[in-house]
Length: 478
Image 1 (cartoon, rainbow, N blue to C red):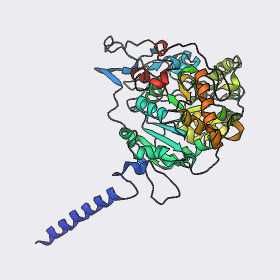
Image 2 (cartoon, one colour):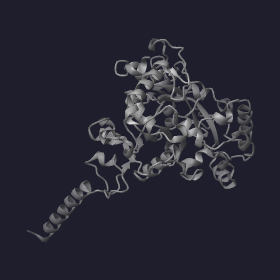
Image 3 (tube, rainbow, N blue to C red):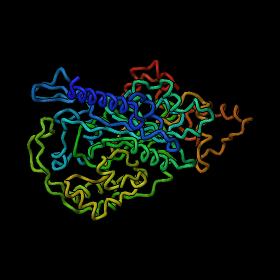
Image 4 (cartoon, rainbow, N blue to C red):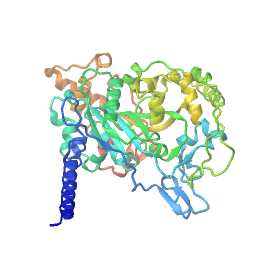
């Protein structure tokens, strides 16, 4: 055989060996998706990476020649290349702005709206879900509702909390739970005991970021607990639009046991609220007096506006506008925590630390203001109403509620609770009574204005739940 052929044969064999090694390597377990779900720093299993890629199958645009409408908010049959006709509750040139955005004060400022645009390349969305414990229903709802919009779900769970390991999320995933979403799920085992909820979230984010690769600066992070279900409208807005103000606070409808019992207005997660430092955005924003230079003109075919005045973002003007609003808000101390932020802002302003999301005075540092003034991007907190639902104790059984209550820190544990084994039956009976009365573990009375699930509107409950009433009947009954 000629020497040249020998060389070619050796080269081919080396390529085959390299390919076989690459696909069997621990560093990127393509053939074992569950390796991406099992991160334990105490085990030497090699880094399990999930490479974030653009979803080329995302179907959210309706094209009419060179013009485009956003399907979710458009009446497709009535729209045309001349005009997008919006459904009720939607607006904007492309019908991609939900009512919760349209009603914000900054949307009435032409200089702010001029920079808001839709990109041909949607942002990637990473949702960090912290402190999972028996919350499989809520996780399932998030994946079913947002599966095409969210690129990665990072779920943090403290496996050691379970009395039986087969109750844990990772065990459920290993046995086929949410099988069709495994390529988007990253599991983080919270191995440090006795962490406060905010620290568990930070642990989940920190470890989760170690498992992700190919992050972009315009990717969006969302931070929620395992009891939250995010609104599809909210996530769609975050994914498709650029140049909206950051960071974003979120207001969630507060529920208990199911989607019919509404907790008192303004109630936020008690545990998170106890740990959050007092903030006063009205005071901090008054000091923000910098002006931003003009950004490059947006010429995208998907732009909200293809013409109009050159964007000159006036931080001082909006600070006054925002301060006037919050000064009139009697519930200022109950402003919800920051829950949505771009990778760029999170890494540069908040230095990838979740706790700092409660310290808005970080925005006042001169080098931060100079940094973002140079980028011509609006940096200040604003509140997105109706970002989703927080369904407290929306679990499958009273036993799961009891198990969850037993794991609460002593500072927030109900006084009536006993974890003695001979008291278990009495505890379960008491929980059943609370559920029937619509009372929380702290005896808060839930709103009983609804008498049946037939009165529910889309803003009351996720549309997906209404469309699958049989599957989720326990979440739609008293």
